[in-house]
Image (cartoon, rainbow, N blue to C red; front, side):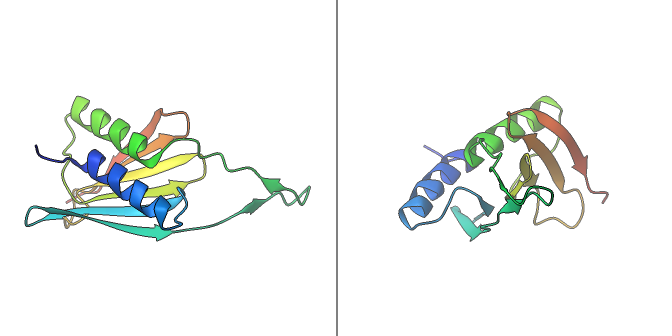
Length: 126
């Protein structure tokens, strides 16, 4: 059985949670020599309303592995190149998912809203 990037991320998320990493982190997933490598960078941040001084609740209700799955399905259905290395960055209102991140040009970025909808995609010129 070949493990894909989504299964790899799910395993890494489980391992990260056991090590105290929150779900709101940036991930970089690379594949080389038959091994997936997942780098996790935590980015603990809080938003405060300027007018009220109150904390603004985290609006990120979509799991990183689900965002990666949605991005992959979108890329395949729109004939976009979907290859390692992958990146996932939490953003206000969702995730920015990247593919082909180790390339010099041609990188793909797909913005996924916290409701699971694809908001837009961009491809860097070569």
